[in-house]
Image (tube, rainbow, N blue to C red; front, side, top):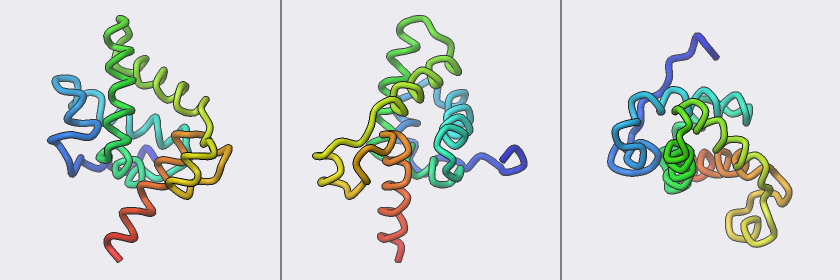
Length: 121
């Protein structure tokens, strides 16, 4: 993965990038790499997730970490730990078709990629 370039946001108005404000330039490559490592999903799949409304919610949790005095990398890591600790429940599985019990972060990264592919197809 270290040889692959970090994909640029395609949604700088909102999603993760827009929510991170002045931290966006620093946080973007750190978040993409860390989420890819945690979920095993591709950098492009993570880019799609971060550009989505789910990426905005993820950024809210990163911002919460920053507000508690964490540095950007530690805030991202804490958000990843939180999202990976949650699992997809019955209602989310029904609403999005993500298998129940899957780690929340992994499920939403995969879901965003599937939605993007279906819209392009």
